[in-house]
Image (cartoon, rainbow, N blue to C red; front, side):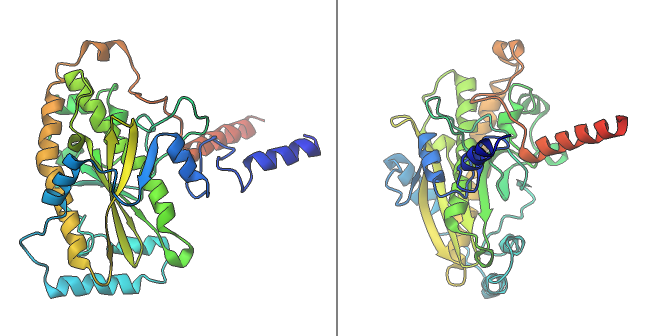
Length: 339
């Protein structure tokens, strides 16, 4: 390769590029990533003004409303102390907030996963825009139980696990139909809420699209109430938790990540607990009931499921960078052993 070609490659795929030279997907930490989101039909709504009236009414009455059971002083004190202790810690320690009264997400009735790349089948993609979104890989995601602890019937699992559906219903290991994603950031290590929001935007849209796909498959129409496909995210540092609601606007043909609430970890433990608990209540009651109704309608399987193998609704799945590297290493090792 000539010197000019090397220089050209550096300019295209170096530190200043919004895409990675390895897999041509964009980088969520790049200053221009908000533009990539926008051009792939995802808008971050900082004020919540894009929340439609019917969704706002639901959020006010079911998600933001106060619970009847207050937290104990001991539970609040433990959460505050945890937030203080992790202030100067790396990102792995920010996870210590999970399971405290601040983020009560360690539940036996919820499937949790995290830190594994998601399939990109439901990731929004503009045909007119060349740069694709980064492959989602949320730090934590919550959805419905799978495997031995699942409450789905055999017929329902047959639908959820079908080759036509699986990459959509189960974008990563740990659960199915995820509805709540978390991105954890350490300020001590340079992490920012801005970066966390960039990451959550993609996975949140995937959660929305999975429910839109299920509704379309079950009823043969896109005429779905906006509330029925929503998902939630939390961007977390030691000092603050910022909640967003993810929703799709048919009128705008856009996916919105709308600001919901933000709470200080050392002052607003109860308010934060309230939001998280209400999200789980909604997800495990009315949302799961509607999901189950729609899954039931897909057994016996639709005729078109039997004619195609792909589960993709957006674009074919590409291997994660780690998996791609591993495959290359295996091929290289085999070549060396045969030489």
